[in-house]
Image (cartoon, rainbow, N blue to C red; front, side):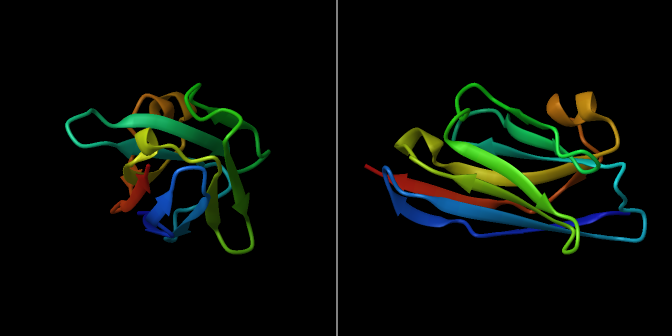
Length: 124
């Protein structure tokens, strides 16, 4: 089992920045995992935001956030981050951390593990 705990959400004005954190724990967590971020806005489906391979730091982004968001990880802390810059009102959503061995399964929204979510609100 893997547990994921997000933090760092909040209210920010358009153009501002926030950094989300997701701490992973559990005896089965390892460098074979891929981790990612998803978001779900009110009335919309959950969508992929970004992912990272724990082992080699390869990263993947949705087109809507490319150039504004950066995903990274700290292996010593078993934590993945999502640095969000130049935030827009349309970035408002609940952001979820996710983890899976399989990158395709992660990116298509069917990972084995989810965090509880953290709210990000961007005011105009």
